[in-house]
Length: 171
Image (cartoon, rainbow, N blue to C red; front, side, top):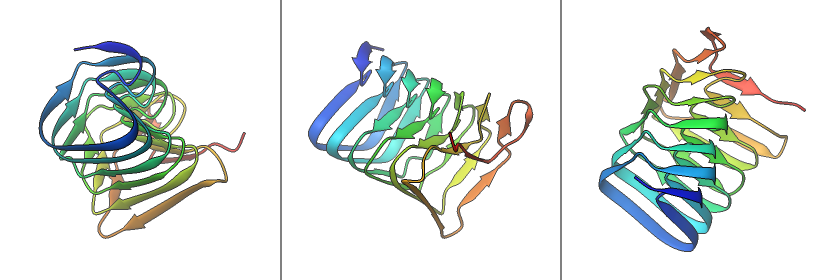
């Protein structure tokens, strides 16, 4: 239960973070990454619970550069006032193999918002997330790359009260 400008619980500029169990919840960042802000870093979240974290961008995680492998089974109840209720990616390489479900919320990209970089969703379920202006996965530029592999499913997400799984923001 902590508040910071970036990285409510962890601020990682270069280095490695491995999370394979436990609970990280109720953290707040005024700007980016309610739980974690990562830049030029390697992140692996393969177990445990990441819930009820808050930020303007990346309710739970903001990946600015580097790589992140998210295999968590419980990424839920995180909130971003702008982009990426669970994860906001502004660069780097993201791989999601775990589930991002149960009440992550944001203006755009209630589960994940990808501004730049590449994101692969492999065998994961993204369900039950709510956005006010964009879908569960928001894509913010032509530099963003999105890949689906395995049995990845994006279902039952809402956008402004309607079904909304994918949103392409071409401003």
